[in-house]
Image 1 (cartoon, rainbow, N blue to C red):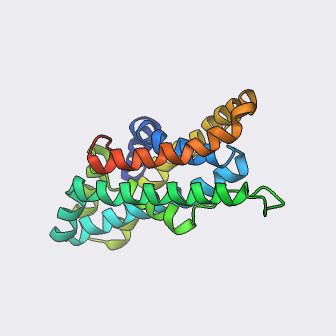
Image 2: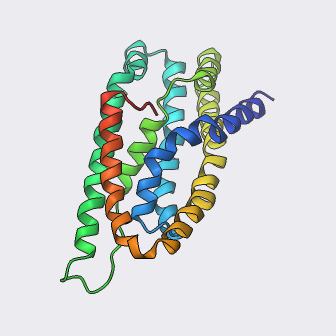
Amino acid sequence: MTLLSLFLVALSYGATACMLTCMPLLSPILLANSATRQQSLKVLLPISLGRISGYIVLSLIAFAGSSLLKNIIADKTLIGYLLGALTIFLAGRLWFSLKAGSSCCSSTPQQTPQGNFALFFTGLLLSMSLCAPVITMMTLSAATHSIGWAISYGAVFGLGATLLWFLFFSVVLTAILKESLVHLSRYRGFLQHAAPILLAGIGIAIIKGWIYL
């Protein structure tokens, strides 16, 4: 019953606050990848796995009672620096891969790989926001006497927080962005090249503390 309750809490969290806060970060990445379903899945799967892994890590930290790691995670400035720097790194990869794809030496259009590790680590950092639902999961993990239950709490919370989030970005937002590119086909190249610049701006805003994810 506890696992079901935790899953429902995570489901509501992933469908509301988490979904909205991730939109400025993920929209430019999906847009730069032409907003196709296949490319969106390639982006969202490693991020989703990173988020689930992050929640399991938080659960294990709560179970182990590591005060040092808890202090690091609670330091929003440090997490902001890490996530902002990684966002700028992803923006750079997007920009240069788009340039390579549009080069006269390239006979076929290339997609814009961001690197699975970078995307996974992005998801990991996105899970480090200690909001009320996450703290509830960590409290349950800290109270249990079994590491197996702690891992279960983190995994169930991660699945709940990621499920509707994943469906929204892979189906709804991808369809909206794809439809927008169809109607704005004349500006397709401009929009795809503007996406990394927007992403870099978001990275700078995260570092400056203007945006919290």
